Length: 211
Ligand code: DLZ
Image (cartoon, rainbow, N blue to C red; front, side, top):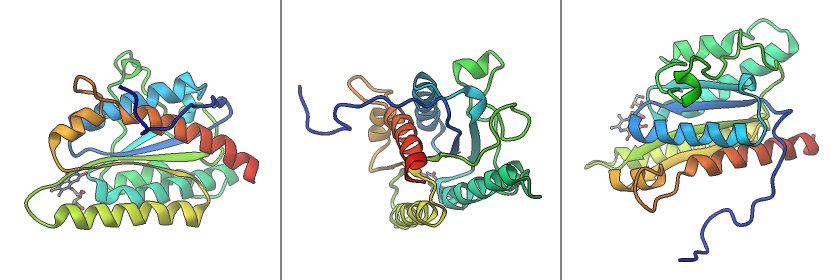
């Protein structure tokens, strides 16, 4: 069945010069893991080098805006050689993050997990785009509404203040079922991670042109 929803005809962009950061929440792991896998696959099939992809995690979606902001700031410090370049790792440690929990991509399973900012042998330029991934599932209280609102505004604020595109990879779900569909884990579903990877490459390339 044809649909009007979605990205439309996608132009392909060359991601080979780009450095991309991914920050993901660990709540609702099954959904997140699948979204992350699809995001990584799309980045790589668009030419982004694995050593130029940095993956970090935080406990829940509420932590995504601060982590995205700190990751970008740390990559800027690293690029300019200022003290604090190591903050990409350090900031995430402070936030309770980890680089290993959910990076169980095929590459990760073969011992080639995406590089951390330091020691990955990749670019030391500031990130061209950051992808923030989370899955919020509505419960019986107002918790979902408050967090969805705060994270949406927080991520918008980060991209407007830093000038670094922040891809909105936050699923705001009324049911777990909706999450499985949008993570490509149900028959007929579509994995939104593919769109987020493609958006990051397009925005990263365009952002370089915008200066
Ligand atoms: C506490 C909480 C709840 C109930 N649900 C979710 C969720 O569905 N998705 C998600 O990403 N995080 C959830 N969290 C955790 C919060 O985002 C946050 O990590 C904690 O409140 C600590 O700040």
